[in-house]
Amino acid sequence: MRVPRERREMFINALIQKKDRGYDYGQILSIAVNRLFKIDLKAQNKRLAICSELVYEAAKEAGIQVPEVSQKYIVPGDFLKWRILSEVFS
Image (cartoon, rainbow, N blue to C red; front, side, top):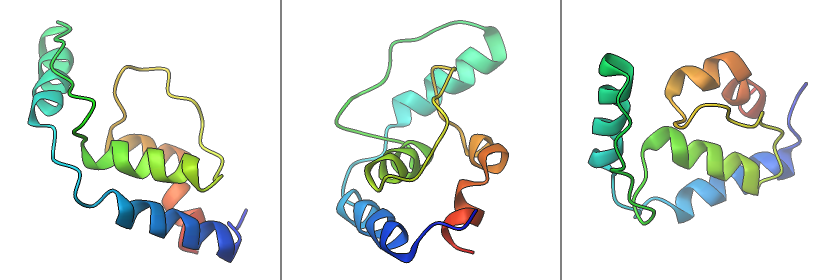
């Protein structure tokens, strides 16, 4: 399924608007600790984000169908499974 041009432009604009949002190193640490040791840390800062989180949020804002996330964190591998980027840029 190809994403219409209007939605692709909305997606790109949403990403541009998020470009100055700071990087959440605490969330990266939380993901690593959770994946390695199965321990949940509460290190996420709502004002900051990781790159995959920004892509997910921008896609939803643009009305691009993305599956709901069942896990606590969105990671780059999720996009490979969902084929979001290939649909947006095809």
